[in-house]
Image (cartoon, rainbow, N blue to C red; front, side, top):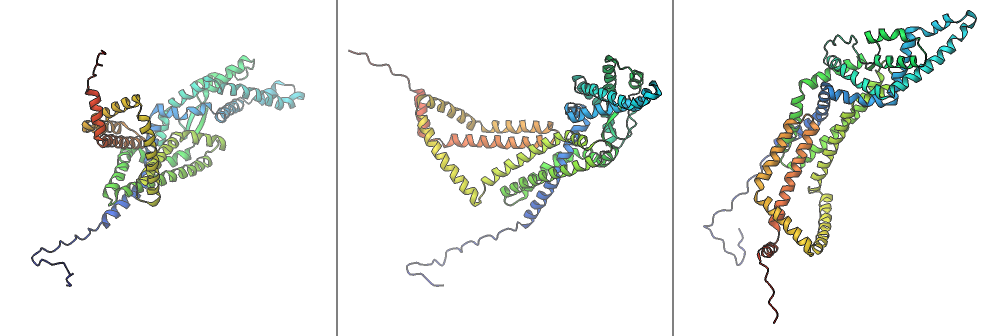
Length: 442
Protein backbone atom coordinates (compact mmCIF):
# COMPACT_ATOMS: atom_id res chain seq x y z
CA UNK A 1 0.00 0.00 0.00
CA UNK A 2 1.46 3.36 -1.03
CA UNK A 3 1.16 6.13 1.49
CA UNK A 4 0.14 9.49 0.13
CA UNK A 5 2.43 12.31 1.39
CA UNK A 6 0.72 14.29 4.09
CA UNK A 7 -1.74 11.54 4.97
CA UNK A 8 -1.28 9.04 7.77
CA UNK A 9 -3.12 5.74 8.03
CA UNK A 10 -4.36 4.74 11.47
CA UNK A 11 -3.59 1.05 11.84
CA UNK A 12 -6.23 0.72 14.58
CA UNK A 13 -9.08 2.10 12.46
CA UNK A 14 -11.84 -0.42 11.61
CA UNK A 15 -12.00 -1.71 8.10
CA UNK A 16 -14.44 -0.05 5.73
CA UNK A 17 -17.72 -1.96 5.53
CA UNK A 18 -18.19 -3.99 2.41
CA UNK A 19 -21.05 -2.92 0.17
CA UNK A 20 -23.83 -5.51 0.21
CA UNK A 21 -24.12 -7.50 -2.95
CA UNK A 22 -27.21 -6.60 -4.97
CA UNK A 23 -30.06 -9.01 -4.33
CA UNK A 24 -31.26 -10.97 -7.33
CA UNK A 25 -34.60 -9.66 -8.59
CA UNK A 26 -34.94 -11.97 -11.54
CA UNK A 27 -37.79 -13.98 -10.01
CA UNK A 28 -39.80 -10.85 -9.25
CA UNK A 29 -39.29 -9.52 -12.76
CA UNK A 30 -40.41 -12.80 -14.31
CA UNK A 31 -43.45 -13.01 -12.02
CA UNK A 32 -44.42 -9.44 -12.81
CA UNK A 33 -44.18 -10.03 -16.56
CA UNK A 34 -46.26 -13.21 -16.30
CA UNK A 35 -48.96 -11.33 -14.40
CA UNK A 36 -48.89 -8.50 -16.95
CA UNK A 37 -49.41 -10.94 -19.82
CA UNK A 38 -52.18 -12.71 -17.89
CA UNK A 39 -53.85 -9.36 -17.20
CA UNK A 40 -53.78 -8.51 -20.89
CA UNK A 41 -55.37 -11.84 -21.79
CA UNK A 42 -58.13 -11.50 -19.19
CA UNK A 43 -59.15 -7.90 -19.94
CA UNK A 44 -61.21 -8.66 -23.10
CA UNK A 45 -62.73 -11.76 -21.52
CA UNK A 46 -63.72 -9.73 -18.47
CA UNK A 47 -65.29 -6.98 -20.56
CA UNK A 48 -67.29 -9.49 -22.60
CA UNK A 49 -68.36 -11.36 -19.47
CA UNK A 50 -69.59 -8.23 -17.70
CA UNK A 51 -71.44 -7.06 -20.80
CA UNK A 52 -73.06 -10.44 -21.49
CA UNK A 53 -74.27 -10.99 -17.95
CA UNK A 54 -75.58 -7.47 -17.48
CA UNK A 55 -77.22 -7.22 -20.91
CA UNK A 56 -78.90 -10.62 -21.19
CA UNK A 57 -79.85 -11.51 -17.61
CA UNK A 58 -81.52 -8.17 -16.86
CA UNK A 59 -84.88 -7.68 -18.58
CA UNK A 60 -84.77 -3.87 -18.58
CA UNK A 61 -81.23 -3.86 -19.97
CA UNK A 62 -82.20 -6.43 -22.59
CA UNK A 63 -85.16 -4.33 -23.75
CA UNK A 64 -83.02 -1.19 -23.68
CA UNK A 65 -80.39 -2.90 -25.85
CA UNK A 66 -82.88 -3.80 -28.58
CA UNK A 67 -84.96 -0.60 -28.29
CA UNK A 68 -83.06 1.40 -30.99
CA UNK A 69 -84.05 -1.20 -33.59
CA UNK A 70 -87.65 0.03 -33.41
CA UNK A 71 -86.43 3.43 -34.68
CA UNK A 72 -84.07 2.06 -37.32
CA UNK A 73 -85.52 2.47 -40.83
CA UNK A 74 -83.70 -0.62 -42.07
CA UNK A 75 -85.32 -2.76 -39.37
CA UNK A 76 -88.78 -1.19 -39.48
CA UNK A 77 -88.96 -1.47 -43.27
CA UNK A 78 -87.84 -5.10 -43.05
CA UNK A 79 -90.55 -5.82 -40.47
CA UNK A 80 -93.15 -4.18 -42.72
CA UNK A 81 -92.00 -6.17 -45.77
CA UNK A 82 -91.91 -9.43 -43.79
CA UNK A 83 -95.39 -8.84 -42.38
CA UNK A 84 -96.84 -7.98 -45.80
CA UNK A 85 -95.28 -11.04 -47.44
CA UNK A 86 -96.65 -13.24 -44.63
CA UNK A 87 -100.17 -11.93 -45.21
CA UNK A 88 -100.09 -12.50 -48.98
CA UNK A 89 -98.49 -15.93 -48.69
CA UNK A 90 -100.95 -17.25 -46.14
CA UNK A 91 -104.05 -16.01 -47.96
CA UNK A 92 -102.86 -16.72 -51.55
CA UNK A 93 -104.21 -13.35 -52.57
CA UNK A 94 -103.36 -13.68 -56.24
CA UNK A 95 -105.28 -16.94 -56.54
CA UNK A 96 -108.32 -15.40 -54.88
CA UNK A 97 -108.22 -12.38 -57.18
CA UNK A 98 -107.86 -14.62 -60.23
CA UNK A 99 -110.83 -16.72 -59.08
CA UNK A 100 -112.97 -13.62 -58.63
CA UNK A 101 -112.23 -12.32 -62.16
CA UNK A 102 -113.68 -13.62 -65.43
CA UNK A 103 -111.46 -16.14 -67.19
CA UNK A 104 -110.64 -13.66 -69.94
CA UNK A 105 -109.50 -11.11 -67.33
CA UNK A 106 -107.50 -13.57 -65.19
CA UNK A 107 -104.25 -12.29 -66.69
CA UNK A 108 -104.59 -9.01 -64.74
CA UNK A 109 -104.64 -10.84 -61.40
CA UNK A 110 -100.84 -10.51 -61.16
CA UNK A 111 -100.68 -6.72 -61.68
CA UNK A 112 -103.61 -6.20 -59.34
CA UNK A 113 -101.93 -8.33 -56.69
CA UNK A 114 -98.70 -6.36 -57.10
CA UNK A 115 -100.52 -3.05 -56.71
CA UNK A 116 -102.34 -4.36 -53.64
CA UNK A 117 -99.08 -5.67 -52.22
CA UNK A 118 -97.43 -2.26 -52.67
CA UNK A 119 -100.37 -0.51 -50.99
CA UNK A 120 -100.42 -2.99 -48.09
CA UNK A 121 -96.66 -2.63 -47.64
CA UNK A 122 -97.01 1.17 -47.46
CA UNK A 123 -99.63 0.82 -44.75
CA UNK A 124 -97.41 -1.60 -42.84
CA UNK A 125 -94.50 0.85 -43.03
CA UNK A 126 -96.74 3.50 -41.52
CA UNK A 127 -97.50 1.13 -38.65
CA UNK A 128 -93.83 0.24 -38.07
CA UNK A 129 -92.87 3.92 -38.18
CA UNK A 130 -95.33 4.91 -35.46
CA UNK A 131 -95.09 5.21 -31.68
CA UNK A 132 -97.40 2.22 -31.42
CA UNK A 133 -94.77 -0.03 -33.02
CA UNK A 134 -92.10 1.19 -30.57
CA UNK A 135 -94.31 0.23 -27.63
CA UNK A 136 -95.17 -3.13 -29.23
CA UNK A 137 -91.49 -3.81 -29.91
CA UNK A 138 -90.46 -3.17 -26.30
CA UNK A 139 -93.33 -5.26 -24.96
CA UNK A 140 -92.56 -8.21 -27.24
CA UNK A 141 -88.86 -8.13 -26.33
CA UNK A 142 -89.72 -8.17 -22.63
CA UNK A 143 -92.07 -11.07 -23.35
CA UNK A 144 -89.36 -13.12 -25.11
CA UNK A 145 -86.56 -12.30 -22.64
CA UNK A 146 -86.96 -15.59 -20.75
CA UNK A 147 -86.66 -17.42 -24.07
CA UNK A 148 -83.37 -15.63 -24.82
CA UNK A 149 -81.89 -16.68 -21.45
CA UNK A 150 -83.04 -20.28 -21.91
CA UNK A 151 -81.53 -20.51 -25.40
CA UNK A 152 -78.21 -18.95 -24.39
CA UNK A 153 -77.84 -21.24 -21.36
CA UNK A 154 -78.65 -24.34 -23.40
CA UNK A 155 -82.00 -25.03 -21.73
CA UNK A 156 -85.31 -25.76 -23.40
CA UNK A 157 -87.19 -22.56 -24.24
CA UNK A 158 -90.45 -21.81 -22.44
CA UNK A 159 -93.75 -23.00 -23.84
CA UNK A 160 -94.30 -19.62 -25.51
CA UNK A 161 -91.60 -20.44 -28.09
CA UNK A 162 -90.82 -23.68 -29.93
CA UNK A 163 -88.07 -22.14 -32.02
CA UNK A 164 -84.39 -22.73 -31.31
CA UNK A 165 -83.61 -19.30 -32.75
CA UNK A 166 -84.07 -15.99 -30.96
CA UNK A 167 -87.17 -14.36 -32.43
CA UNK A 168 -89.49 -11.49 -31.57
CA UNK A 169 -93.19 -11.66 -32.35
CA UNK A 170 -94.60 -9.30 -34.97
CA UNK A 171 -98.19 -10.55 -34.85
CA UNK A 172 -99.44 -7.33 -33.17
CA UNK A 173 -97.84 -5.35 -36.00
CA UNK A 174 -99.65 -7.45 -38.60
CA UNK A 175 -103.02 -7.12 -36.88
CA UNK A 176 -102.50 -3.36 -36.60
CA UNK A 177 -101.74 -3.29 -40.33
CA UNK A 178 -104.90 -5.30 -41.07
CA UNK A 179 -106.93 -2.69 -39.18
CA UNK A 180 -105.28 0.06 -41.24
CA UNK A 181 -106.17 -1.77 -44.48
CA UNK A 182 -109.71 -2.41 -43.27
CA UNK A 183 -110.11 1.33 -42.69
CA UNK A 184 -109.12 1.83 -46.36
CA UNK A 185 -111.81 -0.62 -47.52
CA UNK A 186 -109.50 -3.64 -48.04
CA UNK A 187 -111.14 -6.44 -46.06
CA UNK A 188 -109.54 -9.45 -47.73
CA UNK A 189 -107.19 -9.95 -44.75
CA UNK A 190 -109.84 -9.80 -42.01
CA UNK A 191 -110.26 -13.61 -41.78
CA UNK A 192 -106.63 -13.89 -40.67
CA UNK A 193 -106.89 -11.45 -37.77
CA UNK A 194 -108.53 -13.77 -35.23
CA UNK A 195 -106.17 -16.62 -36.09
CA UNK A 196 -103.11 -14.40 -35.72
CA UNK A 197 -104.22 -12.99 -32.36
CA UNK A 198 -104.85 -16.47 -30.96
CA UNK A 199 -101.73 -18.23 -32.26
CA UNK A 200 -99.09 -15.44 -32.48
CA UNK A 201 -97.49 -17.37 -35.33
CA UNK A 202 -95.64 -14.51 -37.06
CA UNK A 203 -92.17 -13.62 -35.79
CA UNK A 204 -88.95 -11.88 -36.80
CA UNK A 205 -85.65 -13.71 -36.35
CA UNK A 206 -83.02 -11.77 -34.42
CA UNK A 207 -80.39 -14.47 -33.94
CA UNK A 208 -80.28 -17.75 -35.85
CA UNK A 209 -79.91 -21.19 -34.29
CA UNK A 210 -76.34 -21.49 -35.59
CA UNK A 211 -75.38 -18.14 -34.09
CA UNK A 212 -76.91 -19.09 -30.75
CA UNK A 213 -75.13 -22.44 -30.73
CA UNK A 214 -71.79 -20.65 -31.22
CA UNK A 215 -72.52 -18.22 -28.36
CA UNK A 216 -73.85 -20.74 -25.81
CA UNK A 217 -70.44 -21.95 -24.58
CA UNK A 218 -69.06 -18.43 -24.11
CA UNK A 219 -72.22 -17.25 -22.34
CA UNK A 220 -72.17 -20.18 -19.92
CA UNK A 221 -68.53 -19.45 -19.04
CA UNK A 222 -69.40 -15.77 -18.56
CA UNK A 223 -72.19 -16.71 -16.15
CA UNK A 224 -70.10 -19.22 -14.17
CA UNK A 225 -66.95 -17.11 -13.82
CA UNK A 226 -68.31 -13.55 -13.84
CA UNK A 227 -67.32 -12.65 -10.27
CA UNK A 228 -63.94 -14.36 -10.55
CA UNK A 229 -63.18 -12.30 -13.64
CA UNK A 230 -64.58 -8.99 -12.37
CA UNK A 231 -62.55 -9.22 -9.14
CA UNK A 232 -59.59 -11.33 -10.26
CA UNK A 233 -58.54 -9.30 -13.30
CA UNK A 234 -57.96 -5.98 -11.43
CA UNK A 235 -56.34 -7.95 -8.61
CA UNK A 236 -53.87 -9.55 -11.04
CA UNK A 237 -52.93 -6.09 -12.31
CA UNK A 238 -52.30 -4.86 -8.76
CA UNK A 239 -50.20 -7.94 -7.95
CA UNK A 240 -48.14 -7.39 -11.10
CA UNK A 241 -47.24 -3.90 -9.88
CA UNK A 242 -46.49 -5.03 -6.32
CA UNK A 243 -44.29 -7.90 -7.49
CA UNK A 244 -42.18 -5.70 -9.77
CA UNK A 245 -38.85 -4.15 -8.85
CA UNK A 246 -39.65 -0.93 -10.70
CA UNK A 247 -43.33 -0.47 -9.92
CA UNK A 248 -43.95 2.59 -12.06
CA UNK A 249 -42.72 0.77 -15.13
CA UNK A 250 -44.78 -2.27 -14.17
CA UNK A 251 -47.86 -0.06 -13.87
CA UNK A 252 -47.08 1.39 -17.30
CA UNK A 253 -46.80 -2.13 -18.71
CA UNK A 254 -50.20 -2.95 -17.22
CA UNK A 255 -51.73 0.07 -18.95
CA UNK A 256 -50.10 -0.83 -22.27
CA UNK A 257 -51.33 -4.42 -21.90
CA UNK A 258 -54.83 -3.08 -21.28
CA UNK A 259 -54.63 -0.89 -24.39
CA UNK A 260 -53.47 -3.79 -26.54
CA UNK A 261 -56.21 -6.00 -25.07
CA UNK A 262 -58.88 -3.41 -25.92
CA UNK A 263 -57.56 -3.09 -29.48
CA UNK A 264 -57.58 -6.89 -29.79
CA UNK A 265 -61.19 -6.97 -28.58
CA UNK A 266 -62.13 -4.31 -31.14
CA UNK A 267 -60.60 -6.45 -33.87
CA UNK A 268 -62.41 -9.50 -32.50
CA UNK A 269 -65.72 -7.65 -32.63
CA UNK A 270 -65.08 -6.85 -36.29
CA UNK A 271 -64.48 -10.55 -37.00
CA UNK A 272 -67.52 -11.50 -34.92
CA UNK A 273 -69.64 -9.06 -36.88
CA UNK A 274 -68.64 -10.77 -40.12
CA UNK A 275 -69.45 -14.18 -38.64
CA UNK A 276 -72.83 -12.96 -37.41
CA UNK A 277 -73.77 -11.52 -40.79
CA UNK A 278 -72.58 -14.59 -42.69
CA UNK A 279 -74.64 -16.95 -40.51
CA UNK A 280 -77.77 -14.81 -40.32
CA UNK A 281 -79.81 -17.32 -42.32
CA UNK A 282 -82.80 -15.80 -44.14
CA UNK A 283 -82.18 -12.33 -42.69
CA UNK A 284 -80.72 -9.88 -45.27
CA UNK A 285 -77.10 -8.86 -44.74
CA UNK A 286 -77.88 -5.19 -44.09
CA UNK A 287 -80.52 -6.11 -41.51
CA UNK A 288 -78.14 -8.57 -39.81
CA UNK A 289 -75.47 -5.86 -39.65
CA UNK A 290 -77.83 -3.43 -37.95
CA UNK A 291 -78.96 -6.17 -35.54
CA UNK A 292 -75.36 -6.95 -34.52
CA UNK A 293 -74.48 -3.28 -34.04
CA UNK A 294 -77.50 -2.79 -31.76
CA UNK A 295 -76.81 -5.92 -29.72
CA UNK A 296 -73.16 -5.02 -28.97
CA UNK A 297 -73.55 -1.25 -28.67
CA UNK A 298 -73.16 -1.29 -24.88
CA UNK A 299 -70.09 -3.48 -25.23
CA UNK A 300 -68.63 -0.94 -27.66
CA UNK A 301 -69.31 1.87 -25.20
CA UNK A 302 -67.65 -0.03 -22.34
CA UNK A 303 -64.71 -0.85 -24.60
CA UNK A 304 -64.14 2.78 -25.58
CA UNK A 305 -64.37 4.00 -21.97
CA UNK A 306 -61.92 1.34 -20.80
CA UNK A 307 -59.52 2.11 -23.65
CA UNK A 308 -59.64 5.82 -22.80
CA UNK A 309 -58.92 5.09 -19.13
CA UNK A 310 -55.94 2.85 -19.93
CA UNK A 311 -54.58 5.43 -22.36
CA UNK A 312 -54.93 8.31 -19.90
CA UNK A 313 -53.19 6.39 -17.11
CA UNK A 314 -50.43 5.25 -19.49
CA UNK A 315 -49.75 8.86 -20.51
CA UNK A 316 -49.62 9.97 -16.87
CA UNK A 317 -47.24 7.16 -15.92
CA UNK A 318 -45.03 7.96 -18.91
CA UNK A 319 -44.91 11.66 -18.09
CA UNK A 320 -43.70 11.01 -14.53
CA UNK A 321 -41.04 8.59 -15.82
CA UNK A 322 -37.34 9.07 -16.54
CA UNK A 323 -37.28 8.89 -20.33
CA UNK A 324 -35.63 11.74 -22.26
CA UNK A 325 -38.85 13.03 -23.78
CA UNK A 326 -40.72 12.80 -20.47
CA UNK A 327 -37.99 14.79 -18.67
CA UNK A 328 -38.00 17.44 -21.42
CA UNK A 329 -41.78 17.67 -21.23
CA UNK A 330 -41.71 18.14 -17.46
CA UNK A 331 -39.06 20.87 -17.80
CA UNK A 332 -41.20 22.70 -20.32
CA UNK A 333 -44.20 22.32 -18.03
CA UNK A 334 -42.23 23.72 -15.10
CA UNK A 335 -41.16 26.73 -17.15
CA UNK A 336 -44.74 27.32 -18.17
CA UNK A 337 -45.88 26.91 -14.58
CA UNK A 338 -43.27 29.42 -13.41
CA UNK A 339 -44.53 31.97 -15.90
CA UNK A 340 -48.09 31.35 -14.83
CA UNK A 341 -47.02 31.71 -11.19
CA UNK A 342 -45.48 35.09 -11.93
CA UNK A 343 -48.66 36.22 -13.61
CA UNK A 344 -50.72 34.85 -10.75
CA UNK A 345 -48.49 36.66 -8.24
CA UNK A 346 -49.21 39.93 -10.00
CA UNK A 347 -52.91 39.23 -9.92
CA UNK A 348 -52.70 38.22 -6.27
CA UNK A 349 -51.58 41.70 -5.29
CA UNK A 350 -55.15 42.93 -5.47
CA UNK A 351 -57.07 43.02 -2.19
CA UNK A 352 -59.90 40.72 -3.33
CA UNK A 353 -57.45 38.11 -4.58
CA UNK A 354 -55.51 38.32 -1.31
CA UNK A 355 -58.65 37.65 0.72
CA UNK A 356 -59.62 34.72 -1.51
CA UNK A 357 -56.08 33.35 -1.21
CA UNK A 358 -56.25 33.62 2.57
CA UNK A 359 -59.54 31.68 2.65
CA UNK A 360 -58.10 29.06 0.33
CA UNK A 361 -55.02 28.78 2.54
CA UNK A 362 -57.21 28.25 5.61
CA UNK A 363 -59.09 25.48 3.82
CA UNK A 364 -55.81 23.86 2.77
CA UNK A 365 -54.49 24.08 6.34
CA UNK A 366 -57.66 22.42 7.61
CA UNK A 367 -57.28 19.57 5.12
CA UNK A 368 -53.61 19.17 6.02
CA UNK A 369 -54.44 19.07 9.74
CA UNK A 370 -57.23 16.51 9.27
CA UNK A 371 -55.62 14.52 6.47
CA UNK A 372 -56.38 10.96 7.76
CA UNK A 373 -60.19 11.42 7.92
CA UNK A 374 -60.23 12.81 4.38
CA UNK A 375 -58.08 9.94 3.14
CA UNK A 376 -60.22 7.26 4.79
CA UNK A 377 -63.42 8.91 3.59
CA UNK A 378 -62.22 8.50 -0.01
CA UNK A 379 -61.26 4.87 0.61
CA UNK A 380 -64.63 4.06 2.20
CA UNK A 381 -66.58 5.67 -0.65
CA UNK A 382 -64.48 3.80 -3.21
CA UNK A 383 -65.08 0.53 -1.35
CA UNK A 384 -68.84 1.13 -1.43
CA UNK A 385 -68.75 1.77 -5.17
CA UNK A 386 -66.58 -1.32 -5.74
CA UNK A 387 -69.02 -3.53 -3.84
CA UNK A 388 -71.98 -2.24 -5.86
CA UNK A 389 -70.24 -2.15 -9.26
CA UNK A 390 -71.41 -4.71 -11.81
CA UNK A 391 -69.02 -4.06 -14.67
CA UNK A 392 -65.26 -4.04 -15.06
CA UNK A 393 -65.45 -0.50 -16.46
CA UNK A 394 -67.16 0.72 -13.27
CA UNK A 395 -64.50 -0.97 -11.13
CA UNK A 396 -61.71 0.52 -13.22
CA UNK A 397 -63.12 4.05 -13.14
CA UNK A 398 -63.66 3.81 -9.38
CA UNK A 399 -59.99 2.93 -8.88
CA UNK A 400 -58.94 5.74 -11.25
CA UNK A 401 -61.04 8.32 -9.41
CA UNK A 402 -59.72 7.09 -6.06
CA UNK A 403 -56.16 7.57 -7.32
CA UNK A 404 -56.95 11.08 -8.59
CA UNK A 405 -58.56 11.95 -5.24
CA UNK A 406 -55.56 10.70 -3.28
CA UNK A 407 -53.15 12.62 -5.53
CA UNK A 408 -55.21 15.79 -5.14
CA UNK A 409 -55.19 15.34 -1.37
CA UNK A 410 -51.42 14.96 -1.34
CA UNK A 411 -51.08 18.06 -3.53
CA UNK A 412 -53.23 20.15 -1.18
CA UNK A 413 -51.24 19.01 1.86
CA UNK A 414 -47.90 19.75 0.20
CA UNK A 415 -49.08 23.18 -0.90
CA UNK A 416 -50.27 23.95 2.60
CA UNK A 417 -46.96 22.93 4.18
CA UNK A 418 -44.85 24.58 1.49
CA UNK A 419 -46.32 28.09 1.75
CA UNK A 420 -43.86 30.72 3.04
CA UNK A 421 -44.15 31.19 6.79
CA UNK A 422 -43.92 34.94 6.42
CA UNK A 423 -47.04 35.13 4.32
CA UNK A 424 -48.89 32.89 6.76
CA UNK A 425 -47.81 35.06 9.70
CA UNK A 426 -48.77 38.20 7.84
CA UNK A 427 -52.19 36.80 7.03
CA UNK A 428 -52.68 35.82 10.66
CA UNK A 429 -51.59 39.25 11.86
CA UNK A 430 -53.96 40.92 9.43
CA UNK A 431 -56.82 38.83 10.77
CA UNK A 432 -55.96 39.39 14.45
CA UNK A 433 -54.81 43.07 14.43
CA UNK A 434 -57.61 45.34 15.65
CA UNK A 435 -58.42 48.38 13.65
CA UNK A 436 -56.78 51.50 15.21
CA UNK A 437 -59.05 54.53 15.26
CA UNK A 438 -57.70 57.67 13.67
CA UNK A 439 -56.41 60.41 16.05
CA UNK A 440 -58.71 63.41 16.41
CA UNK A 441 -57.65 66.57 14.64
CA UNK A 442 -56.72 69.57 16.76
